[in-house]
Length: 448
Image 1 (cartoon, rainbow, N blue to C red):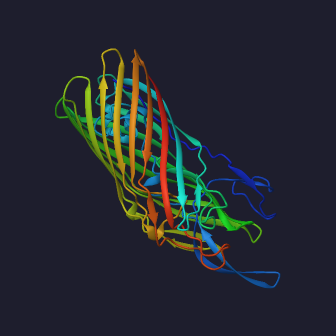
Image 2 (tube, rainbow, N blue to C red):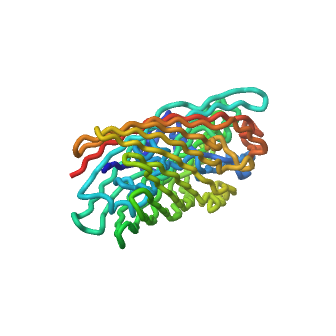
Image 3 (tube, one colour):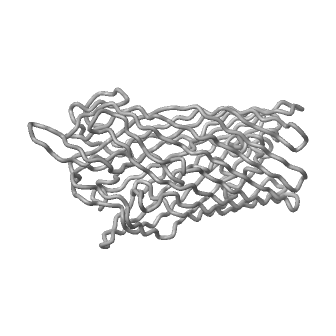
C-alpha cells in the first residue's frame, strides 16, 4: 500500500527592486528604502483627483484583481495522484487523502509520512490586435507539500495532518507590454493546515472531516505611469473545514466524494502609488470558493486501477473585490467569474517487483469571461497530460511525474481598459494569448 503526501507552500521571493516613496510604510514593518517587487494581480476601476502643490491631477487608480480563477487553483497535491491525471478521490489510499478525500485515511495501517515537491513553469505569449508580441517571464516555481497519517492497529479510525496550498499564482509581464497599466507582476500565495479524522462506520464505508486553517498573502503591482507604480500588499487568515465519504462495495469498485468549504480572508496591508500617493493602510476581502470532487475507481484485474473524477469549483461565488481604505484609494471592483469543472481520467499499473507506471489526462475549464479578463491571470481551457513512474522498497516509496499542459489560442475582445488618467491611456488586455506550462513532481514516503 502506498504512503504519499504533499505540503504546498509558495516561496515569497523578490523578483526585482524599485524605489518607493520616502513615506512608504511596508506592511511587514521593515525599514524604508528600495523595496522588493513581488508578482501581483491588478485591474483598473476608479477615477480620482489628487491635489499636490495646489494642482489638480486626474488619475485613474487601479485596484488589484487578487481573486483567482481555475488557472491559479493548485489541485495537484501528490506525485502519484498527479501522474494519473489527479483522479484519486475514490482511491485515496495514502496520506494525500487529507486533501483528496479524508475518508480514505482508514485504509492506512500504522503511521505514514511523505513529502512532495511540485515544480511548475508557466508560459504565456501575447499578440496584440496590431501584431506586437510579448512573453511572460518563465521560471520554475517550487510548491512543497507534506502529510502525516496515523491509523491504530485494528481500529476503525484514522488521523491526518497536512499542509498544502489550494490556490496560488506568480506571473510577471514586462513593463514594455501593451497592457502594463493593467498588469505587470502578480503573486498570490496560500497555505492550508488541515487536521482530519476518519471513521469506518461499516465495512467498506468511511467518513472523514476536520478543520482547516487558511492563510493567504498577496503582493500586487502594476504600472500607473512608466515611472509610477501602484501597489497593494497584505495577508490574512480564516478558518474552514473539509469532509469526505468513501464507499468500496467490492474489491473492484470504489466511490469517493469530497467537499472543501468556501471561506473569506481579509488581507490587511498597505496600498499606494509610488511618487504620487503615500502608502496607507488597506484591507481587501477575498472570497475563496467551495470545491466538490466526485470519483469512481475500477480495478479490472490485480495491479490495475482506472479512475475518473469530476471536480467542480464554485467561482460564481466570487462577485467583486473591495479595497477598504481611506479615500481616494477605496474602491469596489466587480468580477463575474463563472463556475468551472476539472475532468480527470487516469490509470495505474502496479507490478510485483515494486515498480508502477501511471498516465492521466485532465481537462480544465476557463472561468474568466472576456468582459473581466486581465492578463495577470491568463486563464483559458487547458488540456493537461501526465506520466509517472513509481517504486516501492519495503517501507520506502518514491514517485516521479512529468506534466505538460497547453491551451488553444484564446482571443480576448471587450476586456476592461484603463480610462483617462493612466499613462499610456486606453490600454486593455485585448489580443491573443497562447498558454503552456510544464511541471515536475516527486514524492518520497515512509511507513512506520
